[in-house]
Length: 166
Image (cartoon, rainbow, N blue to C red; front, side, top):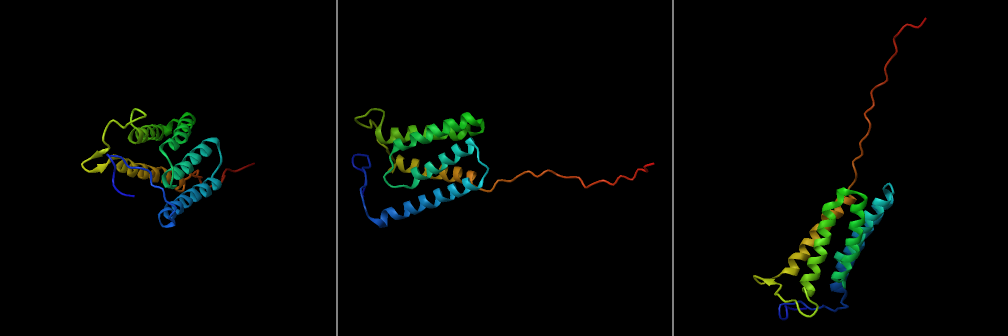
């Protein structure tokens, strides 16, 4: 815990339940609701991929000890989802960009040094990206778990056949 060292945040290692309990509870809450909604919906491969992406994204956002490279599976799932349904283009693009920016912010363009300062106006860019990631997750999660409106066929009332039959 503490401030940045040479413009970088270092790993926080803790076993304190006070620090790790809230994120784990949030993960189980979001993941559990995602799983329940998936089980109650019509099943199909697209839904499986979409809800797998959403559940794994909950894991990435809320579990302590997750690293930037864990976004790789989310990117792969988003590409498969886009391949199945072109309506998921923006989700795929945002997740691919998010994954790459995460890697650059934490590891730089080279493996040895960032090569730039992540701090602008005393704000670590990783904090801003984290806030964006959480907001994007919440929007994606809400769009997947909210009740779906079904279009019901409008039925015309039965007509009476008044024709005279001989």
